[in-house]
Image (cartoon, rainbow over all chains, first blue to last red; front, side):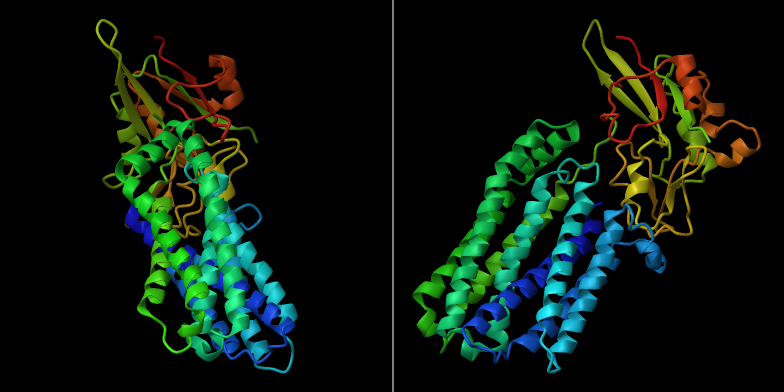
Length: 290
Length: 179
């Protein structure tokens, strides 16, 4: 059963990486513009990369379907189905990314289109979470699902934006305005981790007091995956902490050479969130007779 | 119009699984695919051990989450209350399986689509009983308009082994085994 969920792990993570990175990049654009920095060399290649990433996310989701040939019916019930809304919004977000990329090549400002794209992105993540919240699977029918999905969006967004700066405009990245922005963004990501850690005990307690399927999910998490759960948070916190620290401690030196530990820290955050999503799917035990 | 439903007399059911087999045969299902399943529960201790059997398929609910969550509209509720599916529209996303607390929808691996109990609508059209009802040697399964079933057999507040009935409001009347 679980092997069927790999496409969904990649769809949700890629999708949230694309949405989060887009929003953080647009926030950076706004902040830098106020400081008089308008020559953003990272903008166009980043938008292209995000478009490819979101397209890949949607392609990944197709592998979950048993009859891809019927995929065009999947929007028919958007009136009541969050899955239909998710597919619709993911498609709209991708189309808007393409549009933003296209506008960025003209003389026109991307202010308006980027706002619309950001809203569509947030809507996509909200729909992604709602798909799971409206099931009959107690481990998913909880506000924790929204917190986890938006948490990953923020954390991946900050890391993704940092990667975009680093890959597409390394020279500027370690100048003061960028470092200052990344420091603030790092604390927003830390906030997203803290909120998730606050909700976690509430979530686990609700599973403990819930239906038999909820208790089965809790048992599965603690008896079979206690170390994985611990590892999930250690990886994200260690990676995130290391990144924030490096911006304070080594910002001046990073311009010349990016040490390996930065890449390791990014990998830790990516793997930490991936592990969290793996646990999310594996703990999804449906209610049933019994 | 109206609402079709099932009545299960779990006091009389002996767990022979005749209904399960008749349903599987009628729908030509493969190994591991069941539209109706008989669950067995054992418990207690000497001198009062017990064995319970619960036969269940789609309950053609009043609030079918499978219909609500199906992205294609393949899963739908008919005028007679039967929750039916349009096989040609199913995309095989399994969302209905995540939406049913009774394991009603079943994924047919070979077809890459989901299917479920359709109340043997073809038999009903010919004024015949559903396969499970005909097959039950103990006459523990009845069917008909849910209001008539409630009038005949009473109503249920909550049923042992069942998830909270308020989630989907199943159209079943169950006589529980007294203990």
